[in-house]
Image (cartoon, rainbow, N blue to C red):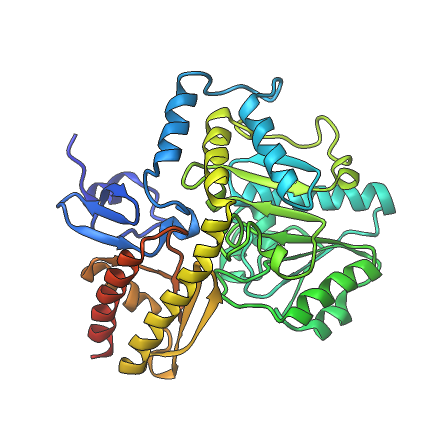
Length: 400
């Protein structure tokens, strides 16, 4: 069957508006479309393809597992799931893991667990969930309500209750809202979709202290920041703060759908048999691939390399900005970098994305005013140089 972009409009629900070209092949940090045109991938499937496309370790893992066992219900367990859970708990604060299919499902599980914990430990009054404006936690109705962007949650009827928001990096605002009725505070340790906003160190520590004072759980949404993205396995490990529950996905599977919720023994006990579940959660194929990704990412060489690449990307962006004067600030950490547009180019982030596609480089946006870069954690330096050369050509066209 011949496939065209026009066919998308005929058969797909119109909630997406993808690019005109269709990628058909990827290798490392390069992609090719139906016409054979090459692209440098600075988008990484929105911070998912942490080892690039078709990494040999991932290909080997899925080939080997595909000849053993594809799927079981959770009436049974499986070896890849247990091995992956053991590696995750050995490498983090957590004692227990729950597997899901996506970041939204991992966050949904985290929120449900927090509510169940609060109900059973403290009573029905302790139900308030506090999150932060411009946050993003997924597209289920619960997670999209907790995410602090009404544009994503409005228009679907009554929202889940007892969810409130305060500005990110504003500890006083949180202090004025949090109380002994607060069940949990949910936050990204670096806001991604909201504009690649780095928290103040004192803010993160203050959030932890307020949670402790009011006996509330601290949930870290590390769907985008986790699994090596900021230069440590999880971002919390660089902040001097430990959450009670952590959600992981995106880079966790390197491109294969998988999510995970991590927590402690004491909190995990509140998800007793039958309280929550997932048909595909802990799927042997997904867990085998994620284990292979873990073994590559959780090494000193790769994690140190992320910080080196961060410096290189920021250096290139600063050089481009010195020439064209389009960015107000270059921010972010590791391979999660945002270039915030200045007043002259306000609201035009998508123009840079589209110009990049035309020049053979894929970038992202984080709202209307930030161009976002989330490439492979192991992107070759030669691809960074070539990709930035193409991105500069895109900037030149937009800047006129």
